[in-house]
Length: 190
Image 1 (tube, one colour):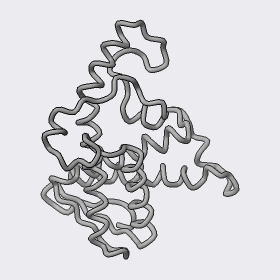
Image 2 (cartoon, one colour):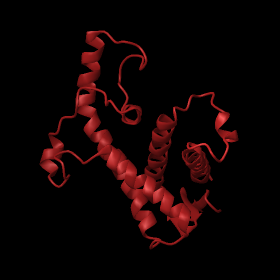
Image 3 (cartoon, helix red, strand yellow):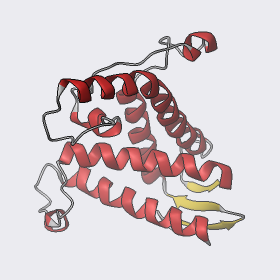
Image 4 (cartoon, helix red, strand yellow):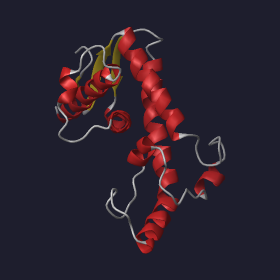
């Protein structure tokens, strides 16, 4: 079970992580929280402010954030007309705060589970109700790393990178997270 999920029954899953794997995964999730930013109202402590919060109307300039929070209308690579941009802006304004909250919740769910290991390796058992949080968090990490690495659908060059390539650690993390994500889906089905 090292580094991959197995079925824990009832739709749940379990994964054995050594200390280094748990530390890397936790660090990536903390970085994800930093990338996503604070909740509505800044600190997230005011539920009324969160209820009435409006999001931005423009796509993020950071390519990783743009991948996590894509435009709702139009081809991402095409120049949109003013009406399409306006519709995308309106959609973004009302949906992005909730999407950011969900992504923060997903990352926090993983961090809390890893914190339960006490900074050491061990087995993390994920209840069926939390598996979707883990899937979302792993997917967000892969989207972010893929954006930073400029991964294209047909990229297979990553498997043969020399150890001296500075992208190698990120590529290894990207591939590892993909394996975790796939094994979690399989465990949930089994």
